[in-house]
Length: 224
Length: 38
Image 1 (cartoon, rainbow over the protein chains, first blue to last red):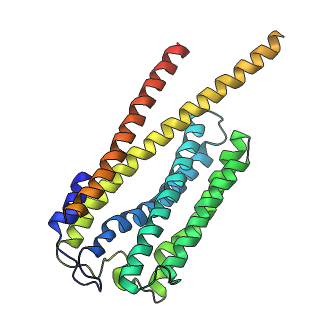
Image 2 (image 1 turned 180 degrees about the vertical axis):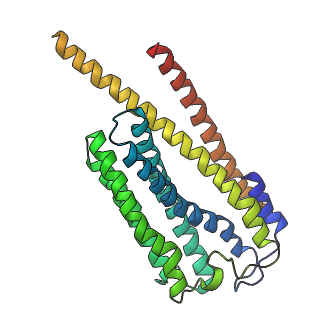
Image 3 (image 1 turned 90 degrees about the horizontal axis):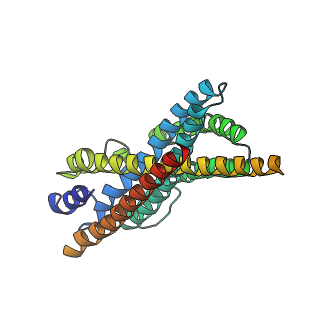
């Protein structure tokens, strides 16, 4: 990440191809990876959901671990979607003159944020671990269908302010594209993997502490 | 320009230090949990 920050400011000159002057366009180096990671979270979570539903018949540590992985992907997806929205609004203000203009891309990220939030609400509302995991996995699989449409299809079939900048990074010139593709995106992916595994380990510990507390209480009851 | 480079670097280094601390704490907790399970 340090290399990514240094490359973004030292290797890349002031933006060309953008309306704004100076280094303002460099927020793209933080906005694009965040949006990219939020989308990737859906894909990974959906993959794990299929796996969970295949494992769900056997109640065991494997299925519980897959559920934790889905939850960690969805939580991080929410964080990166919020970051993408904030950095995108700043870019929008500098480039197009308004923080928010209900562009199809902007509208789609709001819906994606709501889909992530709904998962977290659903998860928080159910006490029973197994039921929570099953409903969470099914919800993720259902939510991935509108997400794929909103992220990859909609911005390509309607006119958006983002223009051909979707994925093709159309407006960027000079070192913008190589630095983004080969330094910044891998750096963010590494950061994401690091935070994700920390979150999964935290959840494992929380569950194991919870399980020993529950078994401790039931042992006390039987001894009474 | 210096501020532009130094500010995000400092934010990143603070975040990295925090993540390292969480990582170490988690490793210690996992080890003590495994030992108590044994």
